[in-house]
Image 1 (cartoon, rainbow, N blue to C red):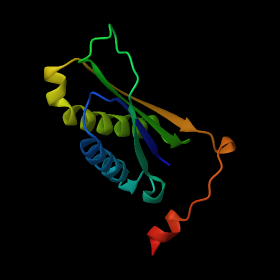
Image 2: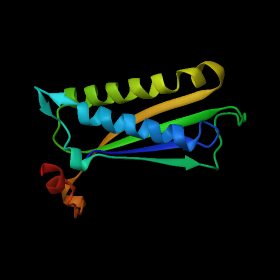
Image 3: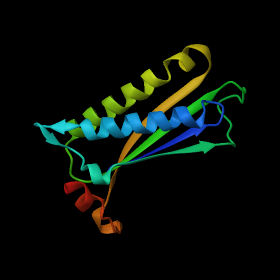
Image 4: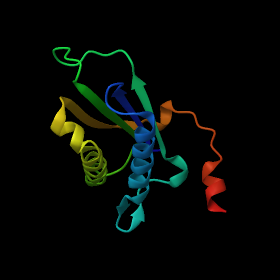
Length: 132
């Protein structure tokens, strides 16, 4: 973990720009530290974006747009670590869409939830590959 899923309205921006944002957000997650220790293992980082073709925002005006980020992390991290992660990710998202925010209706949001180890199944060789 962490897994970050972006959902965004099709009128927000193009796929190339969203791909750049995904890379920047992955780097942001990798940069998170707690007492100089990495917070998230590189092999667990996933960032993906889902473009929503069908949506209605607020009163339905065609220029209104949204991006919602949902970060899921393994349980057990402190509230301070979760807050620092959320602050860093959300600052990056807001900066990335500052121009759109100035010229159109735009709703940006982020939420963090925790996976329960009891309710997950994993088969992953990325951690081992990244060690070598």
